[in-house]
Image (tube, rainbow, N blue to C red; front, side, top):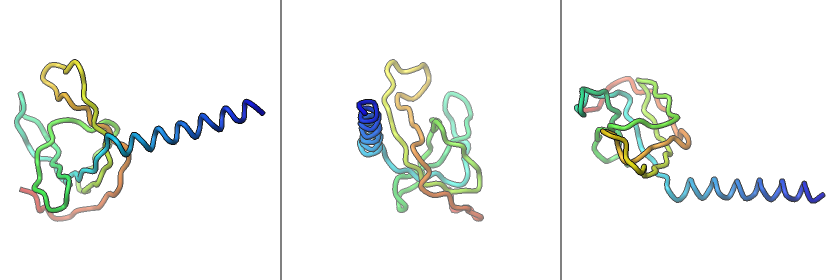
Length: 113
């Protein structure tokens, strides 16, 4: 009986921790249906992202861990951001990881810059 209680309590604790992570260090971003050429140290193909529908698109030079991008679809994602220390050479100090895909909508015409 004690084992069942221990397992049950562990599941509850894990669930609470997962929900707290989603709330504390997460944010929603919109990823455009097309990537654009951008300049880092070398020529790159960057995501265009924004946080709100009315915002302007901005280059996103980093990767989103766990995100399998498919061109032609605009995504709304819940992501977590974690500061990396020490920072790898020529890399971002922020690691972005997919928590979940909120929506995936096919876009046929480009309204991007």
